[in-house]
Image (tube, helix red, strand yellow):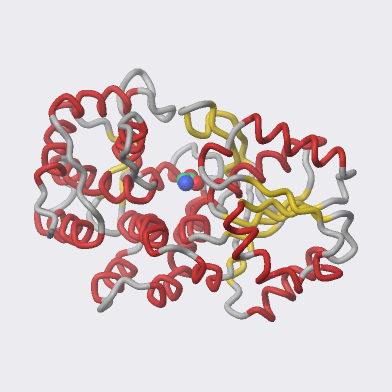
Length: 357
Ligand code: GLY
């Protein structure tokens, strides 16, 4: 099944207004899903662009954060949709980051066997990753994205100006996914990033088109993740395990993108061990990440726990741990199964890497 999908990148408010109006005119009731942050900071930026200045739109707001991405919240949203008369002519606008897009896409794609939805992503991570490619889902407790489907929105409208509303830490965490796209499939983008004098918001906004283009190309070739789409998992096998480990450690926190950045150091090491990445490339990647992200302190006991956590990943088969590794910078190889001793070495490399103070 071909599912051609490309987001629209709208660099000024007039084009965003036109894009919204084209998709909302002559539709039934409009529902807006937003978390507390986007309801406060982003909704006012689009309110006047909605039919009747949004007066007839129904706002469904949520607590921010992964905890809201649950079946309980989905049930609450289904009830609100029923109460306020959503039908197949209605449209749901998902205004937010990855959590809002995943949850909103899941609810819209299952309500009455599917109502129309539009993603309006407001974070770096959602603009280059979560809002592209049709993955929807909710978590089951600590098991991420356990229930969901692949359903494309009728449009993804990317407006980089929303990124002005984000804290710097959130921007840099999302930037890790841009870095990942460069490393797995776009050497030119990697060079542009390395040569930039600063990794700041203006630079990040300017490379959103290239970064989202990498994902669009991959998902248009392999929508249902039978092969090439797994390239997007680079950094995530170890990254997800680090995220889960931190969830088990009271008082510590690590954003998804920060975990992926650290995961990319360890998985670049595995790529080098597999003979697919030169020592110089490994050093360039590790130095860049160490300059822009904080290190993680791990002890030997935690290495074993990380390996245990990785074994539960739903992408594994036959009890082997599945990795995507780099095949030089700008190319990648899916379905790699390194030895566990090498994975231990990779964790050791990450733990000992000299991050500048
Ligand atoms: N975030 C990875 C994917 O959409 O496949």
